[in-house]
Amino acid sequence: MLAIILSAGILLAAPATPCDSTDTLLGTCKTINSGTQIDITATRGETEPPSARASPTPPNPALEPEETVTPGELCGPLGCRPLYGVGTLPDVTIEDLASFRPSAPSLDGEPEGFGVVGMPTNLVATASTQHIAGTLFDWDVTVRFTPAGYVFDHGDGSEVRTASGGATWDSLGLPQFTATSTSHIYRERGAYAVHVDVQYAAAVDFGTGTWRDVPGYVTASGAPYALRVVDVRTALVDQTCVEDPTGPGC
Picture 1: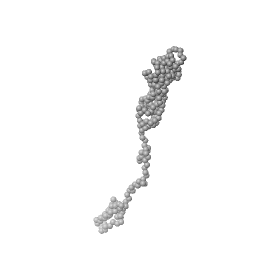
Picture 2: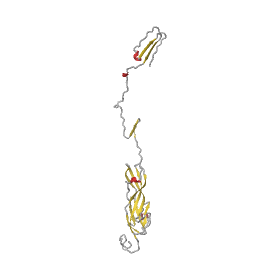
Picture 3: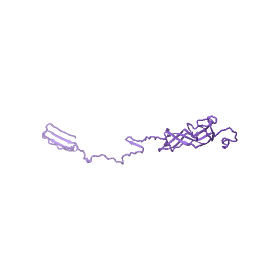
Picture 4: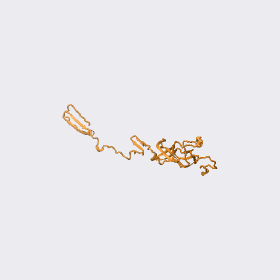
């Protein structure tokens, strides 16, 4: 509000002065003449009719820049940044590896194909570390199988577990019929089917380069090894028992 007050000490016979074109600028004009003082007040009004006042222009979607959101991004006042998901690798049990099977071990013996009652028969099982790639819980995974134990079933009711599959007498630098960690002495002559089961320790790698051990073992069984156990007697013969199984002492 703009108020203008004009005061004069004593103005005799001062005629009231009507509002002039200043009204247009000041708005409503009012003059009071008391005979001794003239008060002129004015209130600034609208300089233009309300209809002429500018109103805010509504936004035009066609003129506004369009914000593009790329899948996998989080956008905010400072722009967009990639979204990073934090995945947790699943826990794996030995039962989950049922579809991953290591290859079967091989089994051989010395002397090849036969043994002697009361003397060590050397058994040799062969197995190796294996890596098998596949999918587990929708993850690409590599499973590593490492031989951890060998269970020999001698076919005569006895069984033994060893840490290794054994080795030949020659590689060990030993004479024939020397006891080894995997040899067995048969007390009765006859035919036996010898078996070996290899217990593999398992570990998994979900593509991170880090192996995670899986508790327990995966067992692989080899084909049976046919063994004929004979007695040894001192006798002159034309052929060995291998050459003539029906010969004396065979």
